[in-house]
Image 1 (cartoon, helix red, strand yellow):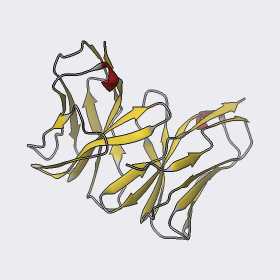
Image 2 (cartoon, each protein chain N blue to C red; image 1 turned 90 degrees about the horizontal axis):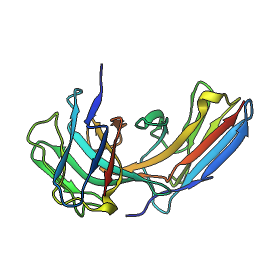
Image 3 (spheres, rainbow over the protein chains, first blue to last red; image 1 turned 180 degrees about the vertical axis):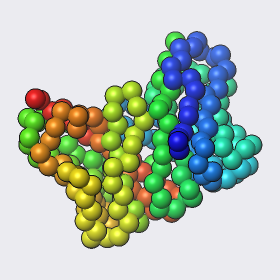
Image 4 (cartoon, rainbow over the protein chains, first blue to last red; image 1 turned 120 degrees about the horizontal axis):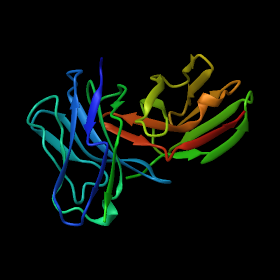
Length: 113
Length: 109
């Protein structure tokens, strides 16, 4: 089954404690991205990756890091989480950077206290 | 970065009613997409539009790509309780993909 898998689904952590949210896709997609979803703001892109070892900032990259060492995996790293990063995070993948549909993971609800 | 203007923000309708929502932008897009998000899940693609003026249906859903390439609408006919959720529009130009803030739909039986 074609899917995008995120882990964990829920996470509560304390300010400053480094964390990683994993994302994996089994569709051999080149393009992967991370979004955060906040009430009234919709989905805002954090980082995206056009292919292995190619990453770039989205609209709200501050406080986040990513890496793309393998095609299927695109982890999101919060080196020093802060309460304003409490949000619902989605990973997505698609075939290419152009006009093709994106497939989303189920989301990771992060709470930073 | 600029997001799309999606309206309405929320809708409360009776089962069986038709629903209409739309997205506008000051920028043009090559692709318009409509997603639905169920509670606790990620967005799932409903309809993709690739050409200005295109009108596409998927069951009870109909969406159109505006001829100016700056807007799109989604209609849902004869709503049912499982239509409940948040509907997002997305516009895409090259690698740039923008989302609306979402329309939260509630359907009363």
